[in-house]
Image (tube, rainbow, N blue to C red; front, side, top):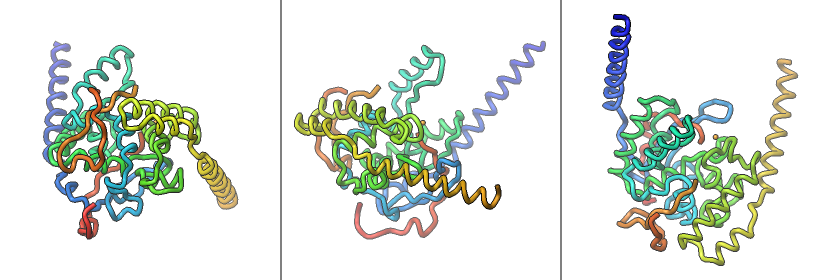
Length: 321
């Protein structure tokens, strides 16, 4: 009798939770506004101290980089590093999910994720970072909607402008300025691979302040794949490998951080006493990507919570991006 009661309550709890997820999916925000490249919206991002800050997604952000201004090496580098089947799946990579489940079962841990670039955009723009089934379900639904309503090029543009690359450094426009002192459009292949190499964990694992050699090694792997698939010529590949990222700005940032910490500590005392895969085929169709690539073979950061765009955020700005 006791076992039956436990089973009854377990089934009831599962059904209630499923109902809750179903209802929450009915109130998901629309992704239709993301079609407009002139639209700006405000979300929230969390700094490395756990504090939230407003962050503008769109042309009103001074670091915003239009898709046409992003080097092709940057685009392919992040696809190779993060989502090799980006141009093949429909927002959700079922094959990657199956492989991740198999891997996690073998390792008896949740060591591998299977989020696509589209899922990451959905999470960063509309959802929190909570690790729950309801959040994952929302992420999947939003990713499918985005894949249906937006071009792959637009999704990639959004992704590259919201990824975390340092302490309150979001998007490659800011990342290029922060690390290399130049606009994203001027990034070299080595610098593109360097930024892409940081994506799995810019806070710890692939933080260039802490693990520069690890970041450089991973960028070497990305460059090797770019060459293998013909994105780089042999000469461009050799040149990129021979170049080392200019770490002078990195050391400058470290020194500045140390000075700020010391100043803060003094003030306080006085007052108070986070396996690369093959590249996907070239996208087809108008609006997919504004760059050419050869025909290839088969081939962590805080999550901002969604805020409704204010009227001022939705003002149309002149010129198509």
